[in-house]
Image (cartoon, rainbow, N blue to C red; front, side, top):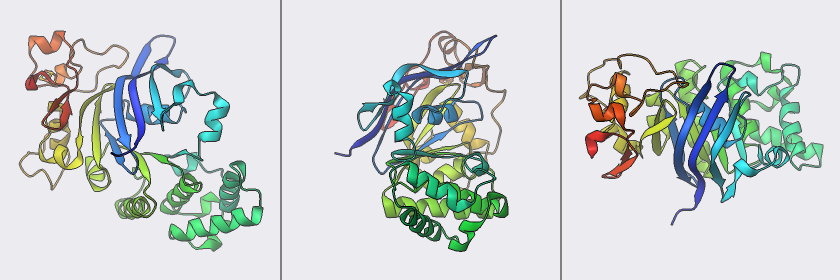
Length: 318
Ligand code: SF4
């Protein structure tokens, strides 16, 4: 039996503003095995990035985890102190951000970023840390001489490679990648995806891969969780999800992007917009945009249920 690396149980993350309580993640349960790449997909504002940030406990203020558990190797991260989380971040769980400049200090040389990360987490010898920095950048296809550069001297693709080097420097068990290719042009995007695939194969890395791009998800992930307005509405293996999407929202997402794998669907956008997460619609949150909505959908909230190996939250399948 595969080892469960991450088990999330009924997690809720809300942002408390003066005017509203924004329910960014609202009752999410999901699990992943060691060595797995789990994709979180959905439109901007559906809660996927908040879920990623919750796992590493980096939710920006005024957000906080209000309920639920995040079990990482069986330890509940929600109960850990900030000091314990600081020790764990980078060493056991790390993050790749959409904009690499978020994780790079513009006035520090690249070598200092990597050496500092290594020394904060246990390297005692600076020379050994520098050797590891050289090994890492070479592995990621960058000349070691570029370690002497500052972030602004590198291209966007190189900066993202350095951000990946920082994320994997300490061989973490889990890497959370938040739209790591979105800010890059398509050629560099393809190179970074190839690089992540290679790293995964070589080091049996586990990723939570957050993306709004289903084409990118199809390239890399094993299982996909589709999020809508703070909830998971469909969860399946990547092959299954692309071959036989069940939830009307997933079908809409697939119809709204050019996709060679889905020849039988015409390209057409989902009507309407995401509802306000501070005041989500009653019943099924997708009902205002769903062509199959009934009175029951407007009243009652569908729960995730198993339909032939896919988990789906929709009354069409009851
Ligand atoms: Fe549409 Fe109803 Fe299914 Fe929601 S539960 S996706 S409104 S059919």
